[in-house]
Image 1 (spheres, each protein chain N blue to C red):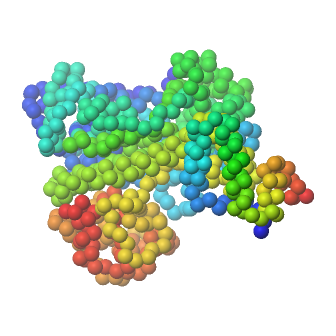
Image 2 (cartoon, chains in turn purple, cyan; image 1 turned 135 degrees about the horizontal axis):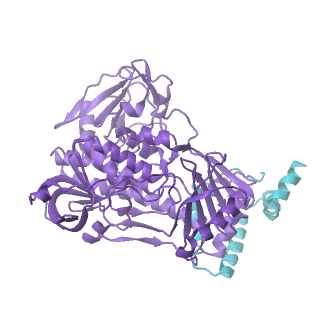
Image 3 (cartoon, rainbow over the protein chains, first blue to last red; image 1 turned 30 degrees about the vertical axis):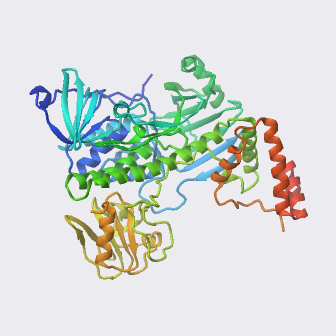
Length: 536
Length: 71
């Protein structure tokens, strides 16, 4: 297996602190160099935080695993300088088709409007994604990526944690002002702090098979309920790069994972799906089951949880890695402000507030999809089948079809960091919402709005309204004026932000709206800026 | 009033979850009886014989109904 990808091996080297037996305190230590830990390293370093990453292995993800990456995480990786490679290598798609038995039941388009830099989704094997981020991390002298470093134990004081770490050279200790645990669904760090991790476990098994095949199927997500080639179960077909295709077969709870993983059992399933005469080779296979659960608190003292270590969802909707990347987007700027003493430590509590809210939204969507895809009773299956049958001939049943509600950012509608609107606005850019992209022109050249929003706080000003940078302590919100710093050539920015002349948006460092007004008032902006920094 | 088959539910996923989870702990027979009660309750709410007749005919044979309507 693995004919299309050569696994890199990253070299272990003993750290200075272990070699000289020196107890060193680091600002931030990240546990785990998967997609979330690597995103954390890139984000923190870009904000100027020296970051140590510990990983107990020395290579990238074995198997294609996560595969589907959504628009918002790609926008975050674009801010971190590594999205271009991913998008170039990945398979772009936005159309999904749902089949019921022999018939097409429903087609959806994930990005029906144009004027966005980043595609709705790309499919890319997880090992490429990690490799690109590791390459990017190597360019930063603030990132210290340590392979073959396994966390054995963790204890906490009021303002730091002590980590006991094992390497090929033995065991040593290090200290961290903050620990960010990105060590996956089976997180050891989570066990070390004694956190709760509860939710719903689903009694079902799924087979993932990656096959290599030359095929001219369109680059769309195809999902089948009860297809003729796999009666009574569901199936999924998705294209990845290098002519690798991801197939997913629901197997039921009684299936034997070891038996199902054997090529002689996989090949007939694939042949039934694609036809006997289709030539293909098996690249990788795995049998999985899943749970939908969440950590009780994202923060345990100086230990913060992100990604699957904090929340585990069903795979329907691509809400796993995509959500984890947004955890980091939320956390990085808060850590920086607190480490610099520019915001109170309590700002970190808003990480739990906002990301637990997002996790619950993801869990709700993913649980609903799972209940639709794998009905738990005959009564439930009858409703499901009725919806699918009616969706072929009516409009009203189509939105009830649920083959996975695909990952979209959760607006922090009720966040304590928001300042409530005092005027009416049309559109969706309410406080707590992730900023929408739009095509703009900068110095006459085509550009994208999100690339103009800096790493700090931004004051987006429409029209000629008098406005100036506003400071709260050492932190400044900088004016970005439409009509001067950028041109809204197509009018899309104005439309998406309901940007009548005089409109002012305060945008957070993670490109979320903190507050907005129909005029500029520096006292109001300063108050909103302080609120967005946790009452600094 | 005509039978309206365009989308009209403000929160389709929330509705569906509530409907299905209401039967989670029922036997099949209990779920069927609940469905019958639910249809009668909703029919009374609609209260328009022409609409109800059209809905009953459509539900009995969705694809056949379309063919008849087209003819």
